[in-house]
Image 1 (cartoon, rainbow, N blue to C red):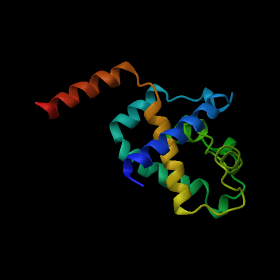
Image 2 (image 1 turned 180 degrees about the vertical axis):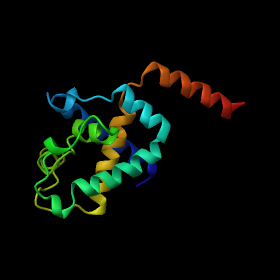
Image 3 (image 1 turned 135 degrees about the vertical axis):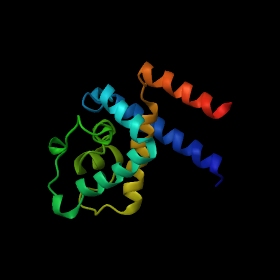
Image 4 (image 1 turned 90 degrees about the vertical axis):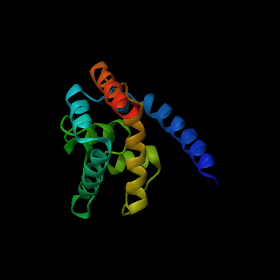
Length: 144
């Protein structure tokens, strides 16, 4: 399968999962706040995803088998908000929305999958105007 076919397949899957999540009263209420956008713009997307990987591993570690999404702080890190918005915040949600069994230990591919969904959700969010303007000015520095 070519990379174009993989991307088309991902888009079809993401369209379906985000359509379903959009119908959820709980998941659809989450959005990134200005402070989280500022944090994301200062730290950079790659750094946020690396931090996200560490947070996911910590949340779903063996010693936290009883993890509940009610225990995960939502307002602090953009990844926490994204986890709640994408139905990847706890084992029950992972099973309900993504068909990842509750009693199965998360493998590296599962963590990668969660990060892919979170990344796609963040990309699909509407950025505040002040960040869009600063991105354009930064882009012009590289295009001259």
